Image (cartoon, rainbow, N blue to C red; front, side, top):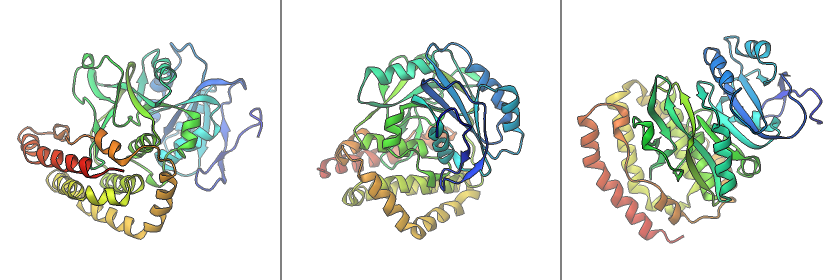
Amino acid sequence: MPASEPLPAVDASTGTRTGTLAGTVPDQARRASIIIVNYNGRAYLDACLDSLREGEKLSYEVILVDNASGDGSAEHVAARYPQVRLIRSETNLGFGAGNNLGARWARGEYLAFLNPDTEVEPGWLEALIAALEQDPQAGLTTALVLLMDEPDGVNTCGNDMHVTGLTLCRGMGAHRDAFSKTVEVGAVSGAVFAIRRELFEALGGFDESFFLYVEDSDLSLRARLAGYRLLAVPGAVIYHDYRLQFGPQKAFYQERNRTVMLLKVFHWRTLLILAPALALGEVVTWGFLLLRERRQWAQKLRAYGWIMKHWDRILVSRRRTQALRRVRDRDLIHSLTHRLDYEQTGGVMAPRLAHALFDPLFWLFQRLAWVLVRW
């Protein structure tokens, strides 16, 4: 379909028309496309979109995918921001499918994904793209994310991925000056990252079955499986209205998606060798739920049930993921961390006890796996 024609919004999973597209931009090629997925986030949109207006020298377009918001978000953007390419979905597609939908209509050489509850500092996009251009093996770049209500405090600067697949914010609570150099990280933050469009397409985009949570970790691990590095770029700065919260289904999505990610990426024999670490990971996650989020315990059982019910579907996704392989499991295991930042869950004594009990065991299990896994 020529770019000058009005483009219909589509359901990312079925390809059927579900809405209308408003807010076209000129047809010339863009260096980058900024994709924002919104669900009832009208309160954030003005600050986010206004911050994108300033300070970028390269050409870009802004695409906002509205996931059937009921707060008037789409109408507000259509009226106030005609320069924004607005895609309306008639259903809530979730984070991954919503971003995939935006990427389908993107015309930029690079794709930048941004949460709506953020504001950017001038030059953020240039910094992320420059890091990709300077390193051909860099697949994804992510920014220094600061706390909206504490501008000198770090939300994350890339994410740390644990040997169990658990992924936590890197540097949470540190001062922004703690991060000054671009470094390789375990995973990017879904709040903000950039990727070459051709790589995003080669990876198959986000896993749409995840709906919410872990999509950024899953995309990161698949990129690493394909031989690419992930970089945290402190020269790119955004502010995020972040709070650690557990909604009614968060434990289900996080635990299901984390397990599916591991099942897709690692060889079966690797998963067998990692079994002691994974079992200890279950102890840790069950402990957290029972001590801090007791109402969520049934969601973890529900995650187990979903995986068993959809095993055939997971195997299909696994075959697609394995086709990307350019890196050995041994190298992936070596790049993961054995240490979990228990302090992010709150408290003082419980994190200290958890470090004393679990860090040595996770280190031992990871070390044994690294020694035994030769593939």
